[in-house]
Image (cartoon, rainbow, N blue to C red):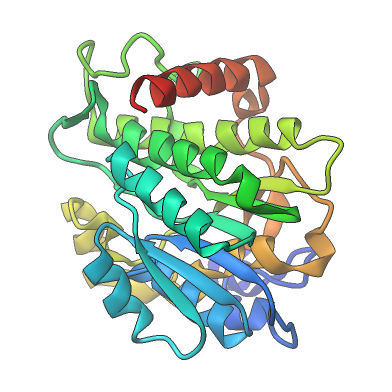
Length: 305
C-alpha cells in the first residue's frame, strides 16, 4: 500500500492515522463526565483536555506544578480543575489524589498521558531509573490510589508507544531497574512503555467481573516537546515533519477515542493504535510478567508511602 494511502486509510472503528480528537468525538456529549488527564500543559495532554472540555466534560488537568496546570486550564473553554501532580514524586502524586478525594470528584476516566522520553544521561528517582519511575511507577501510584474515586463504569487509558517493541528481551529488566548494569536512553524509554502496557493489562484482569475497563494506546509518532532531548527527532521534523509526524490534533485522537467511545464500553485489556485495536509485542501479553511488575510496583509504592 502506498504511504499516502496508508495515512488516509481507516480501520474497523471508522477512524485512522489522520483522524483527530475532534473527529473521533463528533456528536458525542460528555456533559456530566469527569475525566483526569496527566500532563495537561502541553502537546497531547493539552489537546486531549481541550477536546474533552469542548464535548462537555469537566477535566481534571494535572501538570508538574499547579502554576503550569492553571496556565493550561486557562487556555481551554469549558470546565477544568487544575492540580499539581509531579509523577516522579510520590508525595506530589498523593497530594493530587487527596485533592480529588477532598473535592469529592468521581472520575469517569483517567488518561495517563504524561511522560518523559530518552533522557540522554541516566537519572534516578528513589533508586530507580527516572523514565521507569515517572512513566510507570508515578502513574501506578496515581491510578491505584484513585480507584475508590473511579466510577463503576470508569475507564483507565494508559499511553504507551510503539517504542515498546524495542524494550529489552523479556520486556522488563527486573535486575537492572537502577541502570547499574547498563543504560541506553531509548532502551529505558522503551522499557517504560512496555511497563505501561503490562500495567493496563494487569489492571484489566483485576477489573474482571466489573464494568470498569483498562486499555493501553500508541498515539503515533507526534511532534511534541516530549522529544526535547532527541536531536534526531528535531532534525527529522525539520526535514519532513508533516510526512513523518502526526500533529497534536491527530496524536490525541486514540486516547480520547478509547476514553470516551460508547463502542468501547466493555472493551478492556487491549492495545490501540490510530484509534483501532492492534497487537502489541507478543510478550506484552504475558500475564506472568504483568503480575510480577504489579507486585514489584506495589512494593515500591508501599515503601515510598
